[in-house]
Structures are given as structure tokens and as C-alpha cells.
Image (tube, rainbow, N blue to C red; front, side, top):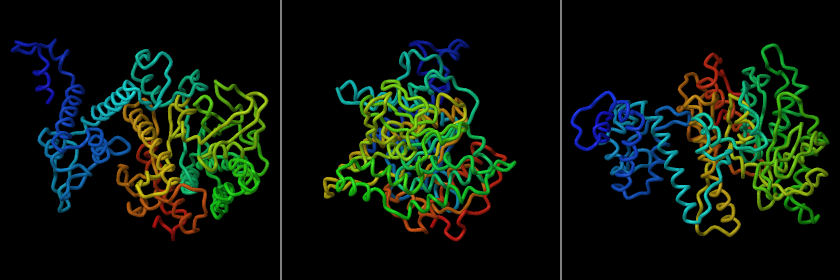
Length: 519
């Protein structure tokens, strides 16, 4: 394939290949990327589908979330959601190949060498799409604000870092040694999933190794409680706390026994006050008490994020300061933790905006942290060389034309954030696979089979998909369902950590709630 591409790129009339030609035109990555681009274009035309959709389906089928080769089963309709006309083109052009095993036909990439060029090709395609939308006067997703623009960034490292982390308040901090954990997601579903992740990290002795824990939305509930109880955890010499369940997990279960979102919305109507303020009162009453941001430890650094409506930028809550560059900073803020976490959960229309009055920044309006920073990466990406990402965002719900207007509003909010979330995830994975960052990514939507590691806990994909589809609300969940969500966070983080972060880590022997499993 590379030789054919080299011949095609030779100047007209050239009949021999010299060493200079090989250096100038024999780029393997370029050849594979060009082959993939041409195959995608022809396959999309033959199948009568959009190239963007084909690229998305192809990446889901043949690339795992950690950037390794995946496999897809052959069905009567096609492979991995792609119709047969497209599959036939891709196979004839040697992008994919078929194998007979386990009494079935399976498809995979023809070689691992394709992975990097395919990831880069898809990223270039997305950026071209965004540029085209912008040129037509339509709003393109705001992904980055690198100083001097992409063209002015020196080298691949800065380019990839800039596409993921653009927090202005952290831009002056160089990447250094350290480990950050970023957790995100919506609803009690994601709070409990995050609790399971933290439980596994505790059992592995990893919590004291963290330098920062960044969070937004309901994952911030679990992270904030961990920070509040940090000094009481009494870690042993192996970095494990015997009081983790008592101090962190058990209170989160009690919180998930109640419905908070509708309660806050109804109370705001009766009392003529904002729903987010009522949510903050509920969180103070049931989880955080009157603790302020000054109750958090100095290390590790706990940060919660919201989106600042006036500037359209990230708003950061921490023990050292809160605010952003546009609005200014409040040093050593005395803000209640409950208020900060409620602001990170300010989801429209019932719980947003969160309105804060501060002497340094004045009156500000905030909304959900996931609106701007879908993976809670911004405050960690530039600062640490190892970044762990726990993604509790569930799958996008299917919209139906006959649904009511309020349901369509939620469909709109969901759709507007899905593409940005996907791009953030892909850019983070690109940084991992190219060695720019160390760390790992796992999701409530993950399949354990995608992690190249053995001795995983039993998690049937159908059961985990059901857990991922639990509505992202702050409404009461049945105790058994709560336990299953915690178990799933525990199991998937175990697989991801052992596969991509620490190969010496002993596998988890059982679920925290053994009788519940994941379903």
C-alpha cells in the first residue's frame, strides 16, 4: 500500500524511485491515512450514507476506547452497524479483513499500523467539518482557545494538549509529574458509579497517590464528600482506608434514597426562590452540613467546576480560590461546599441558574459544569502528566416526534452536548495513544471486553448497558439498583487501571456487593 502510494505521488514522467523519493514520498502514515480517506469516501458513496456517520460507526466497531483494535461480528444486515456495500469496499481496499473463528465471521483492521493514521484522519475530518460549518455562518463547537492558535503551537505535544485543555486559569502552569483523576456524569446514576470507582481506587491503594481530583455534575457529590472526609479516612501503609465505606459510600446511598430534583423545583415555586438554592440547602442538610471549601484538604487538590454564563468559560471552585480570569478570583473562599456542588449540578430548566453573590466577583450566574467541560479535564490537563478519566455520562436518549415540548427541550440539551463530549473523549484518547499523556479512560458505557486484560469481574454487556441507561436525574433509586451501579464503577475501573495504568495491580476478586453483581 505504501509503495503504491509512493508511485502515485511521484512527479509525472518519473520511472525510477530514488532514495530521495523514498524520503519525500514514502511516508507510511500518510499512505495509510490516504488509503483510509479514499476508502471512506467511496464506501460512503456506495452505501448511500453520510461519510461522518460511516466514520463514527467504523471507529466504534474497529477501535476500542483505549485505541486498540476491536472486532465486529458479521450479521445479515452488515458489520458494526455499517451496511454491506460499505463493508465490501473497505474489505476490497484492505482496510479490514474477515476471519472465521468461534463458528462465526468476525471483522477487524488488517493491521495495528492502521490505528494511528485512522485516529488522525478522523480528527482531521471533524476539524474540517467544523471549519465548514463556521464558514457557512453556523456556530461551530468551541473546543479550544490555544494561545496563538493551532498554527502557532510548536510540536505535536502542545497541539494535542491545547485541543483538550484550554482552561485560561491553568494555562500558565507547565505539565509536571503528578496524577489527576477527573470524574463526571449526571444523576444519582453517575454519583454511585463514581463511588464504585473511588472504592476500587481505595482498595488498590491509589487514593493517596492522587494529586488532584477534578469533578463536575453529580460525580462532584462523591468527590466532594471524599474531600470533606479525607482527614478521617486514616489510610494504612498500603494506602487503603478501612473507613471508606462508612465515611463515603454509605452517606451517598442514603442520599440516593431520596428524590432531590423535583423536591427542589417544587420548593422553589412555593417559596419563590431558585431551584438551585433549594438543592444547595438539601445537600447541606443531608450530606455536607455547614462545611465550606476551606474544609477541604490542601492535598490532594479537590476542584469542582461550573460554567460561567456571562463569559462562557469554566468556573472553578477550590480551597485556594474560586472564579475565572474574566470575572476575577476570590482567594481562600468561604463558600459552602453544598453551594459549590449545587452550582456544578445546575441543569436547566429546573435547577439552573445558580446565582452567587461575592464581594470579589460580584453577582454571577452559573450553570452545569458539564456544559463547558464535559469530562472535567480542564483544570488537570495542562498541570499533570498522568490523567485518569472516569466518564459517567450515559448514552444519548432516543428522541421521538410525539414527545411533549419539555421532553424535546431535554432532547435539545442532550444533543447539543453529545458531539462536544465525543470530541473531547477522542482527543483525550489520542493523547494517550500517542504517548503525550499517561493514564486511562473508562466509561459507564464501556465494555469490559475492550480492555486487554484477564480476570475481570463478570459484567454482561446487556446488564451494564441497562445501568448506563438509568435516567440522569436526582431521583430515588432502589437499593438493589444502587448496589449494581457501585459494582459497575468498581469493575470497569479495575479493568481499565490494570490494562492501561498499572499492570502490576492485583485483579479485584469480587464485587463490593457480591450478591447484586451488575444485573
